[in-house]
Image (tube, rainbow over all chains, first blue to last red; front, side, top):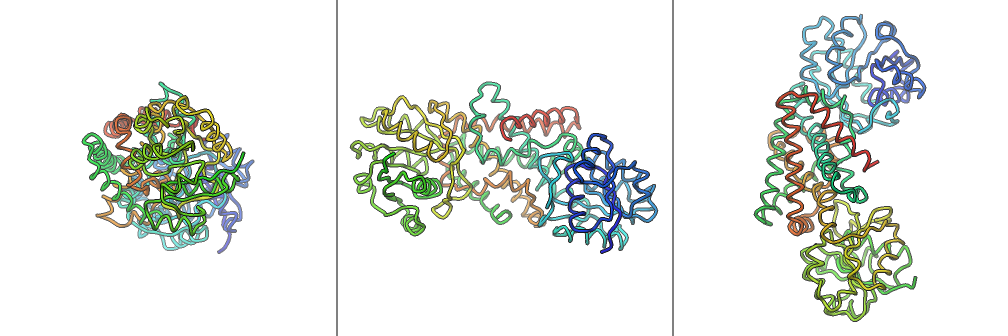
Length: 282
Length: 282
């Protein structure tokens, strides 16, 4: 695989971690960073995530591959601009919502140069300092609407994800957005809401802070996630997230009803059903 | 600290992990296992968690210290029986609910020999095979109603928890049950309900199983927890858990309302408030 000149737009957790992998796997001859946040850009350079910083226009002109890892509200205005400016480069986005984005460029003359992807990896931290080595490995990546991308652009993108150890899946953008509502977005909402539940209580009593157990940490750690990233995700995937959230609230109400009626038998059935999650997570 | 003959009643995840620590820290001259589940008892012996198996009566007669780590519904009938049979032994329980248990033995003539404790450690697995080395280290342990225990029994118990690296807290059983509803029990309910939400969806589509991300795993892993352990916990702490569950559902409804009304500003505020959980978990 020939080394490419690669631009990363958005040098935070996701873009920065990918930059480290691209270097580590020998895929980049040079990595150019583009970031609207000047402090982030400088930090990405100091941390060695990128080799140099450029304006968006200069970066596009000097790259073979352009990878966008910005919040999804920024992405939806950025992607058409990038496609306007490219000649034959490959453009890849790493955003968490896909339906609106893919629709926004559906009829763009350069649509074929764009590959719509979502690597299913992240942490609750953000910014260049949150970038980590060995990210993405053994996780799934979804490529959406592959039939709308040029064969060479798709091939380079698939190779990249294979090299960094990801398991490829392909599906329509609509199916993607529904699935991530279930296996990612709802987890963030339950975690944010659980944090707010406990923080509401904390106004009355400080002792709970000393008691946080590993189980609590596990269920609430996503609540540290960044609002600038998540508000646009929830808004772009509003209808799916609302459906799942309604289902989740109705599941919680079953537990509530068991407790109110002291119905041990049904509570046991609910828990034993939940135990079947064993089949999904080991 | 003189080595003691110690009985562990309930040789599963918690009792088994404590047995490993007691051996490792040189606190036991001999560990006797008692388990109503014959297969568990044999496995605990094979795994070296305990040195020998005895009936409850024989174990009590041949021990200096008796530690009970059984589901809380079993505990509430077991503890008075054990207190009936002891002479001057120390009896310690490790259960997750305390108010009903402490009330059940409040006027027992041997109440002073009993120390009511809750080490804030566990995993989503159960049984002797789930026991792990180095459990409990750096976690909190709560001692409830210490004023009702004899000074020597309290001292031995505090020393034990110090030796295995735990941070001691003392509080009334009522306060304990309220706090654990917030920092442990509600996490299990949200996790069970989240698992059921996703499993409900899975009836329609299998793709979500391939996509489970680290974030999803984190929020849902407690859903693997054992019903035989958790039904009695929720029932014994019913009122506190209901209060917290109601608060949690109302917090989720705030997110729902933001999505329905496309209120980005309020959604951002909810998330930024949740981010304050940073102060509790690092």
